[in-house]
Image (cartoon, rainbow over the protein chains, first blue to last red):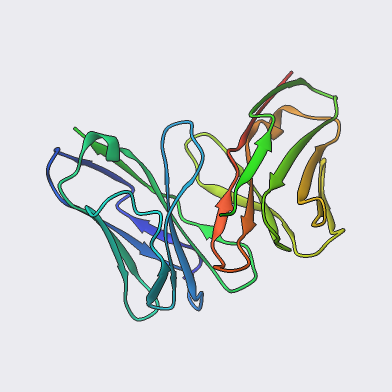
Length: 112
Length: 111
């Protein structure tokens, strides 16, 4: 596609519910990244995919967070049993090796 | 572990003035990127710096990279209001290829 596409753009969920966030990277980009940005804060690294494998999951905050990527393309970030501290904007980015990462518009998650 | 620090965190400046934002990082890397983020928006790529001594310029912004000092600068010349945004540097970790972002510099240019 023309750019990185994320859905939904906004998600309001009740505490304790599970949510799935989707990222559709730029076609042909082998690397895919998930970051989290709390209001007025910087970017917190969550996970990185090279193809379908995730060599670095070190940023996932807890075992409630998981992510997968299929077909070297679409990725899903799943948060189970959401908590209020999970409220943030979740940003996805994709890149070729050795080039800049291009970001999607983000999913704003609000846990009430 | 790669750490990336930016300073200042906040910068309020008058139109027409010059200023520099600094980005320091802790381990060897030859690849550094600058991004701009407007409020409520995602990140937009500004500059890609891929070697020691690299310098890129676009309009009133100029970025440079000194890999020996592990330092990049983003210089603003004759600031205008439209440059108000948050600027992030990101360093590519040579071992893992992931991008580690600085804390961001929130720039406000006063008319």
